[in-house]
Length: 116
Length: 112
Image (cartoon, rainbow over all chains, first blue to last red; front, side, top):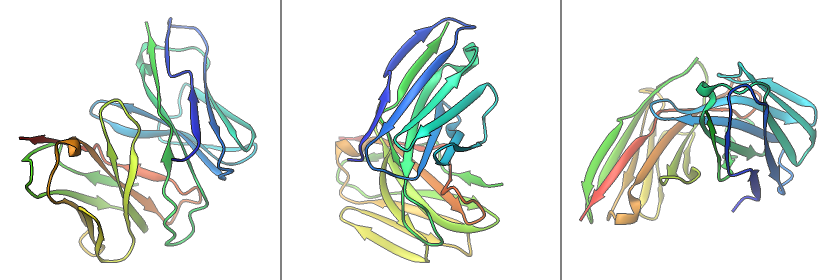
């Protein structure tokens, strides 16, 4: 199994509070991703990183920010959490994906976040 | 952008064969992935297709037709533990971040 650790695994917090989720990898992979998974929507990309200090927005980035100061750590921050951000959050990693290369993404165990 | 469609739910019997379809539209196809996800767990990688044809891996096979924008995942000799969601994901060659776009997933229920 890919060495990916997400923390915390579960969190309950109140609307308006800041929340930070952490993803830590031991594979030295270049790419890291944050997804959210909701019933009826499948996995949707929030932000991704293609190297230290290099990040970009995904499909559903509003209300989220990320940082990557080291290869192994990718942080997702909700500056002021809202109830619509209640979801299961998955981190994923992959090696470089050149033309035709297999290089699947591998997922962490997820963080279940509830915002009341 | 990309549009990926797969059935929401399927039911099959233990020991049988089931085929889960996935259709996609993309401006620059660069690979299709299948993942398995048990309830409450992380998705795990099953198979990858980038050229037309069938890729076989034990009880699981995946087929791709690029001209038709179509793939299927074939599960043989179904077991109860195969009850899970199966996610189809497409990679576009236009993106430099090895990003995937996922379909909504097909929830498979295997009955005795």
